[in-house]
Image (cartoon, rainbow, N blue to C red; front, side, top):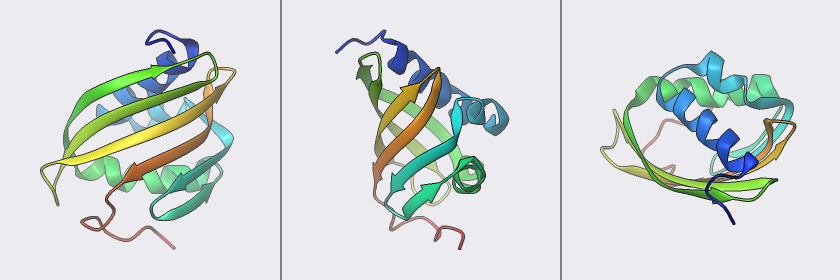
Amino acid sequence: MNAHSAATETALAYFHAWSGHDVDKAMAYIADDIVCESPGGRIEGADAYRAFLEPFVGIVTGTRMLAAFGDERTALVMYDTSTLPVTSAPAAELVTVRDGVITNSRIIFDRLPFPPPPQ
C-alpha cells in the first residue's frame, strides 16, 4: 500500500473537492455508473450519487483528513467531519478507481444523527 498511489491521489482529490464545498468538481471524480454502499443503502449512478452527496456537503462545516493509503486500483481514506447536526462525524471510505474516476465506494459512518436519505 502506498500513500501516493494513483487511486489514493484520485480519492484525495475527490475528498478535497467535496470538503471544499465544490460538488461539481467532486463529481468530476465520480464515474457515471458508480455503485456506492452506504449506511443509508445502495446508490447507483452519478445522478443518485450527487443527490446523496450534495445535501451532506451543504451541512459540512469542517473536515480533517485522518489517513489515506492504497494501491493503483483501491484507496482507503478516513476523515472526520464537523457538520451542523454533529461536531464530530468520523467516516471511512474505500474506493475503487478506474481511469481516474471512482467506480465503487463503500462508506462507513454513523448515520443516526443525519437526515434520512432522499427516496
